[in-house]
Length: 159
Image (cartoon, rainbow, N blue to C red; front, side):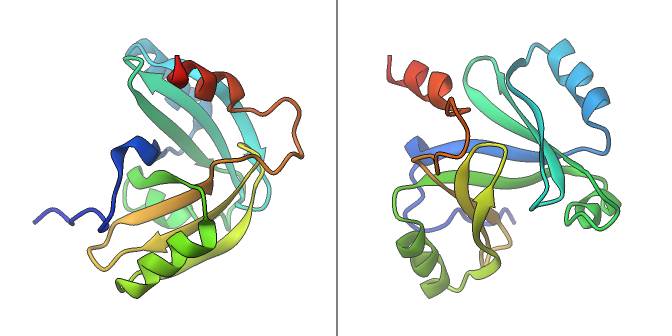
């Protein structure tokens, strides 16, 4: 049985689908050969101990490639199971309220709110009762990176 999406899931809030890979360079070659376009080049997130890149597939679906930076990277567990699909990421206009709502429905916060260095946003991860991992990412940037790494992509979505 497929795990249900969280109550209140709004596809307009969907930012990306996270995909864990063992080797970022090799994965980028494979995905771009399939026609994916690189939107945000690989960048390290020392807090999460991963490298992330953002691509778009057919101009419609955003895919975040995630590769471990260190031996104790949290994605090593996912890689031990073969890597691949890891999470869905939703934009959040109120991280605390969205986390509370997921917790009220039985979700377990697996990563408390913290800074996400690659996209310059606050983020948190929740495991839903159905087994779906949901990343909540603040829509507005924190402001540590100039320019905003997502500004061009978000503006293009409005056009």
